[in-house]
Length: 530
Image (cartoon, rainbow, N blue to C red; front, side):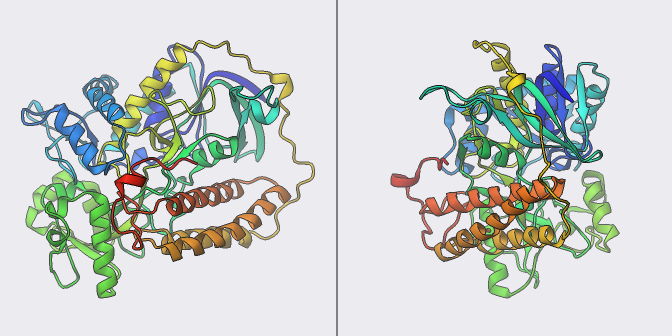
C-alpha cells in the first residue's frame, strides 16, 4: 500500500491529536500510533495544564518568570513569552472541544505544583490527561478527514537526501513520509505526507524506573537523528520525585499536586527533609526534589522515602485524588491513614529534536511538537504542568506554518523504493532483545541517572557502543519486529543522552555531575546541539 496524505502525524498524544483536529479542516490527515490511539504520555498526565492568568493574583508575567527560573538559564525567553501568552486562547479552544475542568461554583479550581508561585493548574481531579484525550478522540473518530492507524509503528523517515541524494552543497533536505510497520499483519507499508509531524512523546523506557507507559521509547528522536535532523539538550532528562514504590506497581505516578495541597516528604523514620535543600521545601522544582531524595536514600540505604498526606483529611483526598487513592488502596496502602512509598523515576525528556518557533526541524516539512521536540520552552528543567500547554500551542503554530508554506511540494513516489526484506531471517532467540533492553535501562539508571560523574559517563559511553553494535547487527539480520525497532531506538536515545551529558561540564537543571557541581554561565549557558 502506498498512500499520500496532506498531513502525516506520527503519535497520538495531545500534540498529535490537537494538530490532527485543526489540520482536518484543510486536508486529509493520517495518525499513526504504535498502540491503541489513547495510549500516550498525555493520557497519564495527572496534575493538569498550566495557564495564565486564571486568577486575580496571577499574571502572564509571573508564569513567564516561574518558567524561566525553573528552566535554569536555558529557556528561550521569546518562546516562553509566546507560549504563555497563548495559554488562555488554547484553553478556551479545549473547552470548546468538550473538555471539562474542575470548578468551584463558577470559577476554575486551580492546583499548585512545584516551582509555581501561584495556583494556575487546571485539572480534572487527578486524571486531567485522560479527560482531555478522551474528549479529543471522540472528535477524531467522527471526523471523515482523519484516518487512524492503530498498532502501527513508524520505522524510518523517508527523506530526500537518503533516497534522492544531494544535488549540490547547501541544498535543503526534505521529508516525504515514513515506512510504517503494521504489528498485526507484520508487514511494512509506505505512507507519504506533504507534511510529516513527529508527535511521538518521550523516552522514559530508556531508564529502569519511569513514570512513562511502555510505548515511551524515544522513537521520534531516534528517527530524526537517523534522518540527519539536529538534536538538542538530551542531557536534561527530568526525573519526577514521586513515582509509587511498590513491587506490584508499574510506572504509576504520584502527582505533584498532592504536594501542592500540602503533602510532606518524609524519611522512613518520619523526618521531613526538604526544607534543608530548598527554601520552597516540598514545592521546590523537580530536579531539586529528586536530587534531595537521591541524597537521602544514599545516606540511609533505604529504597524509598514517603509522601505523607494523612493530615489533608480523608474526604478531601478521596474527592480530589480518587485515582491515586484507589490505586494505592488496591495495593494495600490507605493514603488517608498512612504515607505513600515513593522514589524518583524518569519522567520527561526536556531535550529533543531541535525546532524553530513553529515546530519545524532542520529538515524541510518535518515538524516535531510536544515532548519529542526541543523548542526552548522548558530549558534545562520543565516547570510542572507546562508540557500539555506546549503541545497545544506548538500544534497550532505548526499548522500555521504548513498552511503558509512558500515552497512547491513534490513527492517523487517513483524514486522511493518499497520496503524489502528478502535477505532477512526469522529471529530464533528473543533473549537477545530482552537482555539488551534490560542492559541499556540498568546502565542508564546506574550511570546516567539523577546524579552523574565523569567516570560513570565514560563507562556508560564505552558500554553503549558495544551494545549498539550488537543491536544494529541483529536489526539488519532479522525480520523486522516492534521489539527490534524499539530496541534500536532506545539504544540511539541512550547514546544521545550520554553524549550530551559528557559535553556539559557543569551542573544545571536536570543534569547534575558531581565532578562539576556548579553552574558555569560563562562556558555553558548554551544549548548542547548534536
